[in-house]
Image (cartoon, rainbow, N blue to C red; front, side, top):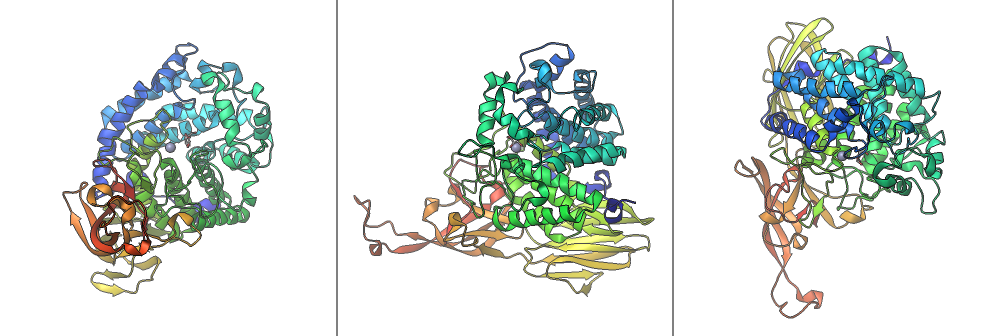
Length: 636
Ligand code: FUB
Ligand code: ZN
């Protein structure tokens, strides 16, 4: 038995059925609209055509970003999660069609990358820092594992295994080095779990351990003439990559790809935030497999740095656009980059940290990220996406259906389709209820069949019921007390249970048609940020339950910068607004407009202030009406 078997035995997606007032409509739209629409985009963007052309033995005329294959892989992954939860022959046939295109494009030795096959077949594996061959391989593997788990078909798994075997033969032997964009590491760990082949575990460990130790990436930066990728749009990618991989004085800087020092020595989260999240997720999976203390300590240290100094109140990550990532402690400017993929990566990492430790704080952060930093990335109608998720806008930032670099839309689709993975967990023979959303699960724990059925009123109010039946078996149940709950009450069959203020409430008893009722008090909180966050100095943000709120121009008469000292007075559920949201209303102070005619400046003591009403809506719902300004942090 490895350490993993001792600590966790995940509940599979097909065991969980979600039926939730808040999430189900979003997931249905994801299934019926988004996944359908994204399939069309795969055709329109040339992604599928690239596979067809490789299969036909053609060359040249590659379309799209050099890692565009991943759009198709992520689409298959999202569709597979849907198929894991219900029969859908039409979708399955579409998935099969895309898989056969991919299989036909695979080279006889297992290699698969349409950019290199079409444009520079002789330059495989020459540009690890930017050309994403291993990143594409990772998304292929993730798609294959999801597809195999959903359908038991091995069509894509065989393709992925052949490619993974080639990568294993090449790396550590013919080529020494790590990918500039992490992703393959976490994928190899998934492949290991599904095949039991230790070579994939070893290969993931090789990539994780080598990062920051070898000088291959640095060497590439200084030897651009030897690199593949030179033919991509006249090689414009190579100088651009140099910018993000060098200090101002032109010397190599590995932080962009978390390659500045070995992972186990890293103290702060650095560089490109999606890359960082994927690396840390993989390393956590590795720690789950090996139980290695040094690795676990470094991951905890990085998590603490991120969550106490480098994370937005929404769970969003990475203020800086130039390198799409982290900068310095407390740099949380509100024109945040905060890529949707980084929020998604954070959910992946935190889920693994939970599996490793069983600690509620990771599930708390998943909840915060899902409802805020992630969900803002998807329009209410499911057809448009944010790439960047600022916390303040002048009204010119809008979602789009697709992007030239379309990493976020299919990433959002795969997370929504796999939401069931985050609700329950089984660990140390206990069942954990990690997220409160209407759902049911039937699973086996130490030979007993346990059925849970949950009803939840989140995020609008805090009432939850969980019906439990284990046919008279005794199974510990751990229920997360959300960090935001001001107070909580829990009863079992009407009898009160003593409840901790945070962490998990454990209830162990013989379960036989029992009902647990939980009430989490939701109050509106005015949050302030640490004094070193210059961007939020003298500002407050409104939060209620798991939701962060914002002001949008459309609901408020004055320009948003004029609102000061918001005092919430009431909350109202408005079924008509933004598909049903609870708004926070109150009064704020604004400057009196009298006496300004013909004047731009005047002594400050001449300006009186007056109180006016404001309305705040959940941050996730912003930019779904008429364009206008938005602010999360309001002057205090
Ligand atoms: O480079 C692949 C993906 O595209 C990254 O994860 C995103 O940040 C975007 O740059
Ligand atoms: Zn993205």
